[in-house]
Image 1 (tube, helix red, strand yellow):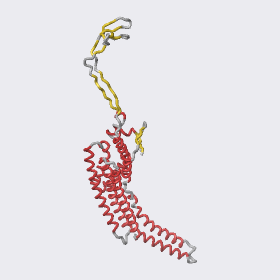
Image 2 (cartoon, rainbow, N blue to C red):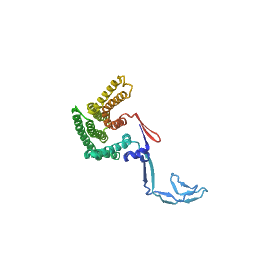
Image 3 (cartoon, rainbow, N blue to C red):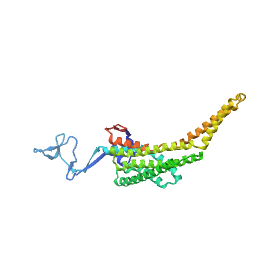
Image 4 (cartoon, rainbow, N blue to C red):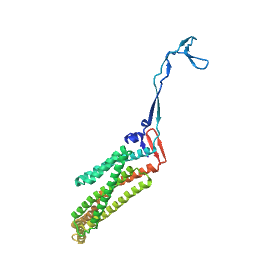
Length: 361
C-alpha cells in the first residue's frame, strides 16, 4: 500500500503535520547579556595583555610591540536558533492512510448519492435522503475532525442512529417483498408482469438504499469509534456481508417469481400456442402432394417457429428487467473495511522515498 507524500496536505491539519516542513521545529533562545561587555577597539593582530595570574589586563599588545588601552562597550542581546525535526507518530501515520483510503472513494460515494437522490426526489423520501446526506457530510468532514473528541462522539451517536433506522427499513422492505413473492399468480397478462416488475423494482430500490445506508453507517461507525482491532472490523464486515447475502437471495427469489408468472402469461402462451399450431399446419400441408410444392406450408412452418420463439422470448426477458437491481451496492464498504484492517493490523514496516510513503504487509 502506498500514498503520495503530497497527498498529506489534503488530509486535514493533523495529518499534514507529518510533512517535514511542518515537523521541523525551530527554537530561538535569547541569551541574557546583562553585565557583559565586548572589546570595541581591537585591531588585527591586537592581543590582550595577560597578567602573571592568568587574568587579562585592560590593554592590548599590538603586533608592532606597542601597547594601547582596551575600550569596552555593553554587549548587545544575543539570540540562538536551533532546528529539530520531530519524529512521526505511528498512529497518525495509520490514520493518514485510512483517510487517504476514504478520500479515493469520495467521488464514487458522491456519485452514488447523486444517483440515489435523483430517485428519492420523485418518491419524496425525506428521512432517507436526510440520512444519506448526513453520512456523506460526516465522511467529507471526518478528515478535519477525526482528532476532535466532541465531534467524534456526537457523530458516532448519529451514525449509530442512522444504522439502527436503516436496519429497521431493511426488515420492513424484506417483509414487503416476501409478501409479493408469496402471492399466487394463476393467470396473468403482460401488463400484470410489467406491474409486478415495477412493484418489485420500487421495493428493491428502497431495500437496496436501506442496505447501502446501513453499510455506509457501519463503516463510519468504525472510523468514528476509532476501534481498529481486527476482531471488531471483521465483525462489522460480517454483518454487512450477511445482509448482502440476504439481499442476493431475495433477488434470486424475485427473478424466479417473475419467471414463473411469465410462464402463465396469456400472451406468451398464446404466442407459443399459435406458433405450435402454425407449425403443425405447415407440416400437414407439406404432406399434401399437390400443395407441398407451394410457399404456404413454408410460411406456416417458419411463421409458427417464429411465433413460438417470440412466446419463449417474452418469458425469458421478464426476469432480465430486474437485473439492474441485482447488486446490493455494499462492496465499496466491505473493501474499505478490508483496507482499514490491513492498514492497522497487518503492516510490518513503513518506508519512505522522495515521493511516496509505503506500508509493507
